[in-house]
Amino acid sequence: MKLVVQRVTEGSVSVDGKIISQIGRGYVVFLGVGEQDTEETAAKLADKLIKIRIFSDSDGKTNLSLKDVQGEILVISQFTLYADCKKNRPSFCHAGNPVLAEQLYEFFIARLKTQIASVQHGIFGADMQVRLCNDGPFTVLLEA
Image (cartoon, rainbow, N blue to C red; front, side, top):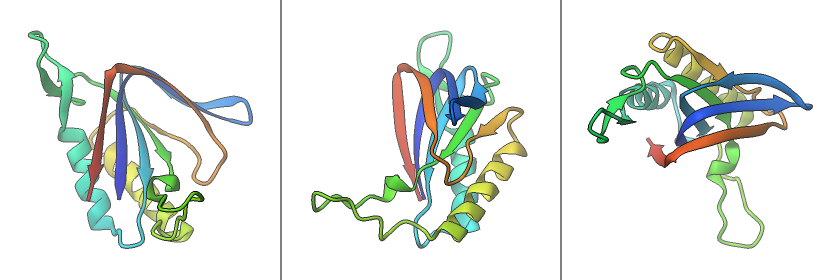
């Protein structure tokens, strides 16, 4: 499983020109599921995401977690994180099959909701447009 985590001041996702989810301060998370991923993988990364300290404290040090700042999360499924670009045309042979990927995407979101008050998400498999204001910019990659 791969996560691209962007610390944001705001984020939203639209489908067919309509905003379906939006957040204020927090994380926009692009989630890719690999062929070997399990619920254990998803739980481990969800817990890591909640605990990672990438918000600034009063001294300007990245020392605060999402919970510390009462931030929000917007999760977007993105199988293209598993693109193999050795050739000019990407291959997605290492991405998890859609059935597994959707199950783990839903599991990941449910796990976050047990600890974070505002967890929003896109629509699995939909053609989405994502808007965000990256704060910093600050982007990290988490993998399991």
